[in-house]
Amino acid sequence: PVLVVEPDPHARQLARDAGARLVDSVAELAPAAGLIVATPATTHYALLRTLNALGKPIFVEKPFTTSVAEAETLAEELTVPVFLMHIW
Image (cartoon, rainbow, N blue to C red; front, side):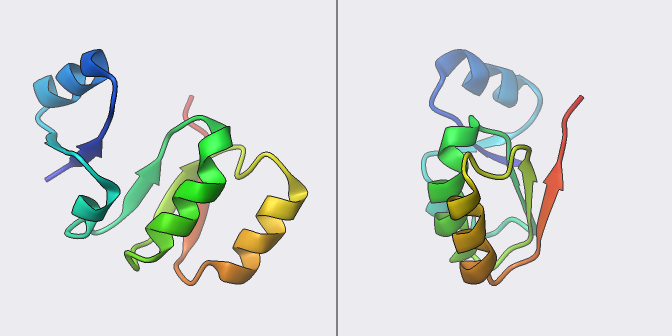
């Protein structure tokens, strides 16, 4: 199943209509085979650090982070495969 964490009510309904299972926290994503981060870039650093603990591959929408320092820290800390992508 596709699991979605989304605070916006309209986006939650769109996800539900598309057949996704809504969950309330990142911790509930543990059953997923992989993770996609499609959030504002300002959230990527903290979110990737949190998701790393789940031990799943992560696709993250670009930009990876908002600073070189954050990117360098993540490069050292992340222990899972991370793929940078662009959604057209």
